Length: 338
Image 1 (cartoon, rainbow, N blue to C red):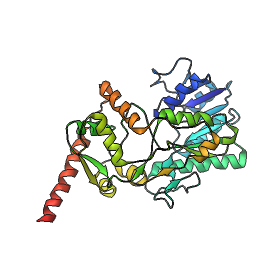
Image 2: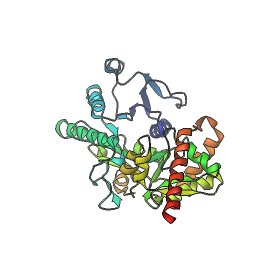
Image 3: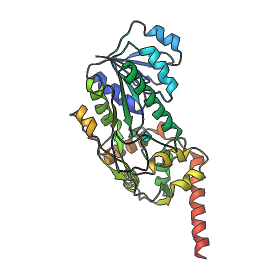
Image 4: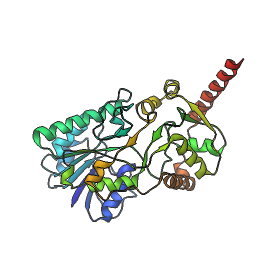
């Protein structure tokens, strides 16, 4: 079986790439070659910018694939380009959408693939919905063999998964914990959330590749484990060997107080409770089961980052912002009690 990944070196796609090679697939990656140093042996790299359509068309003119998957398409124009490039060249085209496209808050706490798609808070999610609409139209009207995959919060060992962080990642929150400084948790920490290790996501994704029953379908891939944000932050603190010092702040306040786009991801995603029903995935991929428990995955991430200082991206601006938010709340309490 032969596959082409556009991208192929991100959090989600890295695990898929590794497992796919182990299963004996002939795998091509099309990317600019900036992050290919850790690719497993046997991967064939086509070095090009996917936006250079003429060059890519020339490079793939003699190639045909069982599966093409685009991991870096975010707006419909990206998929219009992909359609021009890969029409007639693949038996299946997989688009990586997002579970944040689902309507929130939910009418039912269980998220299925039938949950309506709507997100007035986050442009990223609305663009993903528009991409899905475009592809489904191609499938219905022209038979273009699409499969839509919706990941939720997927992580690997290179970043500690959490809710509120700055633009440079999550290390600064871990650093605050290590320094016994208070950390901000959105809401009251009781909203339900699901995090999926990328190695587990890869199992489901690979099961959909070359799967005739997945053509024309939309499927989310997540763990079946659901936890609260309080539990998530306690897991991180436990892995760091410290006591959690939490400060609870409403998502709306955090959105309005941030100098970067924190609100879209909170109000349009993380502030809502979600529990995913993976029945459809398990019908299509009966062998799928997520086996990395979240506390285990978080411990792996914490240990990896502590051992690799190159992943410890300090964020002084975010750190000072946390201090200001917490100070304002403390001052407000004092004034109210006067």
